[in-house]
Length: 240
Length: 289
Image 1 (cartoon, each protein chain N blue to C red):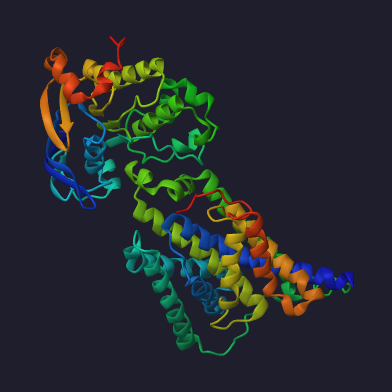
Image 2: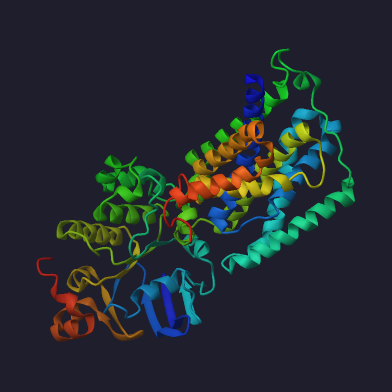
């Protein structure tokens, strides 16, 4: 069973044609990075996969089921965890309450285990979402997605606006999720960090797939990395 | 004189409690689904008539609990068949739909139970005054306030401590993200609608015991309930509760000194509060778009 197969996807916002014939695959246990400049269509791709911005044509197949027109909650119930852009923490709920929102799919993840992974969240358990720092919100968004016990995890810019030390921690967590057997699609502006942990890379440009290949190969191609992945590829220097 | 004030204060509190029950249900539905339910008064009447038909068979107490449940079940059916289709569209559609439903309810009730007002029997020990001095302080009035307090307390317990309640509160601000986390938001909205209608039905049963029962019983309650929501602040349930009690008490006291203004004072108060606090007493800026 292929965790994720996106084929010939065309997605619109009103009249603007955002995604044009996007084709992406994530194999079992694979960590795939989806890169590209701002506005290239990365977030829209994830939103189309999880049903928030359904595609107008093309197909999304998750674990061999065609989910293109499904509502988001049915897609999630298949075991698709999603960490949205900007984290979308519920600001009026406490940390603990935020963790009680997801569907309780059976699996190894419990609130206690999320607290073990992010002890900071346990300290902040009775604080409201709006009181959290960016790093804490990111931990909460990831923890919340894990409580669904996903087998496919979609992350939209988990490093956005975070201090380097926290970014490093996040990427370690993501890499460890893959080791647990999760298949992961990672959208990132932080190109070097993403390429360092990914198996394969897609680059979106203007709503189309402009590059597809193994991460190791992409890492060698400095020029392509700069030209396709945008200026932010230079922002990352000390990640190893 | 002090007896008159006390009497009207208590009356205001009771009326305010009805406003609050109505308004809390309206708020729940508005906050999660963006629907302004003009048919809410119809559901209130439906709960009351269910109790009227049930009480001779089951007795007063069971009718008090079951009749609102009957109204809630009808409410969920109406939500699933009609109102759900209008989610995410221009609010005008659901406004028209529920406005039409309100008329259908009223005529339906007349058709089944007649247009004439009918008495609703409450247990006689509840109907008698507690003391001669405070002749107006009947057991039923105390009982009504107690039931409303239990219902409101129960609602806040559900919202505060159950997964259902936590998800409803989360969905109030960001339903998409609740959905993406695997929660069936269609069912969530239906249950939330049913919860709101249960409160309306309960208000109906209680009101019937005090006012008697007519198909229009919900009419005089619905506009002040909207005012209660606005005074309390859109999106805030504690605000709605305070708003309902406040306008009930203020109009009750006004009736002592200037009885012609009993209804108008509600709107004057709303205008004054909005001038000072444009988002109501407990409203957060921009919580509801």
